[in-house]
Image (cartoon, rainbow, N blue to C red):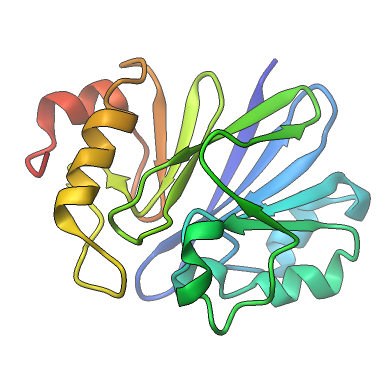
Length: 193
């Protein structure tokens, strides 16, 4: 068992919204709720199965559809990085503010919160035993930009080296834009780190 993952790339920046499902219980979470549509609603199915909206960082393209989900799914819990409160001015208030080391139970799946500041001051990743959702920290053959509010290049590189590159090489990386990769591939081939 484990999780199943559906990806919805959207918009001019190709932001990836993820629907993850705990395969044992059918409970679901949306990672980086920037996109909402009838297709996503159909894939969610039973409204009681959607438990969490999980945000990796406080940029608008990643939280653009939070209000839509909150309006449709009355019991869903919105969890966002505490370190990004200051830049989330147009986002609905989170129910839970996350920090490094927190864990989210989604049925039989545990999502661990890993702080990876740099792209934003409060950026986080969500990790299972075999997958990690990196938001805009790490992409296939690239990394997040640091010229926006609260970004810092040296902090980003340190986060990737010390928080992500220490994970198993086989760990699958699902980033906020672009295609899937692995930690091992990025350690060998990413030209920015």
